[in-house]
Length: 435
Image 1 (cartoon, rainbow, N blue to C red):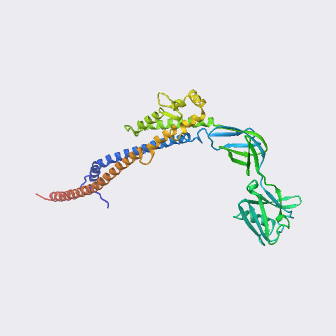
Image 2: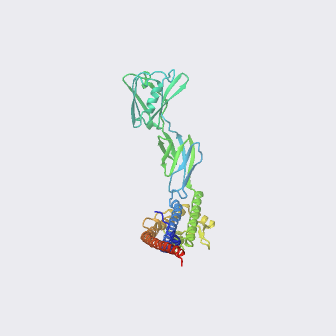
Image 3: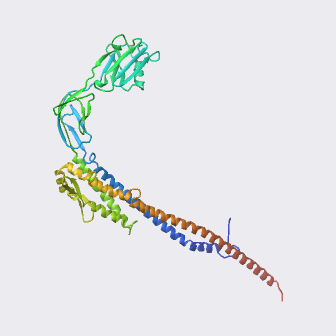
């Protein structure tokens, strides 16, 4: 509906109604400002949680003795073997002699004129390790190429790979065991007719299956694979040749220092966020300063290493300047490492008493579901909901007031218009009256 209150009377009724509406909306505007402030507060709590979670990422690294200062392994001669650390508890230094490498079993067919040469129809039975499968040779695959593809494409075949090589004398079908060593020996038998000739099931041995053999610190180890992961705790050997070499493993102090530096950077970033929020969006709220205080206190407590030994974060090289910025004292850090790299790692990574566990528990107290911040967020959401209800009620009331006021001013406008019309009529009549 289009309204034009005041047209008849000449009074600026629309302006008056607009000003009256603004006056009536003052309580709603106040509530909207309070709601906006609560949105800012809620966002600030999200920033606190984000800062704590980012800090906890670096804490998690320091809490794993497999990641923090992880062991690295090396070989004195990589032409004999390479070495990879995969955990471990202690540094190791072992002499190893590789006597022989594991080889994959290979069988070769007789030579054929080409890869498209025909082979006899029939059934061939293959086995290698625990895997067994049959190949039926018929008019759809009775060529050397067809047999190769039938072997490779069969889903039941998990142990044998087939290929064709062209050499002096013709083309040969080669069967290669997927598993090295004697555990992968290929056996072929034929049923019915005799594809691929009439001897040795159509194949002869091209490469003997052999197991790897090595001597580790004076003791013999035999393996069907050239990758050996169960002989030395925490070290995997990849055999590459015959000979003697030494394998060593030790904590990687370079990556350890990088992890410590990342922890320091992450802590300072978190502390800066808390300081900024305490002077802006959460000014007057004790939450950011409370977290900062408890974080700093966590550096002070003793760390029980067991057997009567203990240390603290300050003894590990951490220090604060007068502005509260965390850093590493290189001298103290080196002294702590000299006292034992494993001891240093344990000070962080011990499940019960480690520094990482201490910080992780503190972060979780604030960020977990039902934690300190979640409770505050729920409180803000409740207050926002209450304000939304108040705004809805006021908006409904204002709508009724606005309609009533407009109706009253419209009636006044009509009355004034009628009076003006009457006044104009009387004035016109008086001007025609003659005395």
